[in-house]
Image 1 (tube, rainbow, N blue to C red):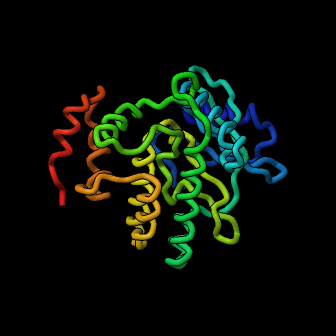
Image 2: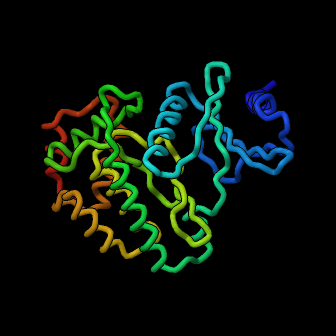
Length: 257
């Protein structure tokens, strides 16, 4: 029995009334994800992940939900050395799908403003990264990057607020956020940079959004939003240990047009 067959067998144990088990057309390469439909036509998501990731996502789910932020209602099931995260399917189209449907630029701007407000709301949730289990592996890297410039504060963030991780309701308002892997202590400036970058990717006029973000957290003025995103992502991908502050300052001396 291969891994996929054994995962499907586990799902059938959890949902004996399952009448359909399939994988979504678009899904990430890190985790195995299945959509389950039972004989009552209720849908559930099953996502196989490591123990640490699963525990992190369960905690993040309960934490954000307790502050009124709609996210997947995660429960865990043991699966060998892994866990299977399950939650009721969140109905609605993603922001990405609505963009492809031809949603107006004006409405896109409104949705990005809602995402900004949600990012701020998440950042205000009380959180102690030294005592809570929801701890990321990269926030120290962010500390080097932004602390060297005296930028931003370390707060709880959703660092991957992009169009594919936002579910909209029938009126094209934000109904839920996906991807709990991306909820962890981070520097708010980075989370907002990623949000601005996503808006720019889809051709939105991000000027107003940039002004909102700059009003909340100042960004380095001598290096563009695009360059900050690429530089920070490059650092995170290529450096296994935390860079010293002096090294980061040397890197940031390079002005990118």
